[in-house]
Amino acid sequence: MLDQITKYRQIVTLNDGTRVLFRPLMAEDKNALVALFEFVGPDDLKLMRNNVRDSDIIRSWVDNLDYRKVLPIVAVVNDRLVGDGTLHFRSGPGRHIADIRIFLSKDFRRRGLGVALLRAVIDVARKCGMQQLVAEVVADQIKVINAFQSLGFELRANYPDYFMMPDGETHDVAVLILRLTTKREEF
Image (cartoon, rainbow, N blue to C red; front, side):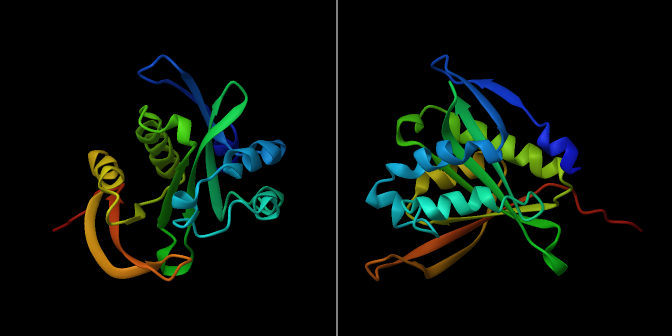
């Protein structure tokens, strides 16, 4: 499976004609990944699980790349990383589930890249044998939730005050799940 994933490539054309390559993150992408997160604004940064402005954190992700734990699929335009979609694989009883996260460069938002990257990451998750994907989205990000739902994710829960921002403000979180396999009912 890992051999197949390392060879994964998909090219899509956005509505404005921009061609985007989706492929797994590689060790040689370290500086490009740092550049992707370098200019993250404060509104995006407060929603992130890590301080992505800290280049040492980003470099450590690449230095410790292990596709069996986290599989990043990057969106590349003219040798520039413009998006990152990750599958975070669970273990033990949840080994059939992966958490999905997406980040897009600000200049590539509202251009169809997010939905295209989500589709690519879902495709990779299927190839990896995942049965369910879970997305956690701050509940007031209606357009993001709608994008996930347009691809089949179902809103399964809303956790009040689930994410705490750096300033102590809390936000509700919507939990969306996409079932990748059908449940077999036998008689």
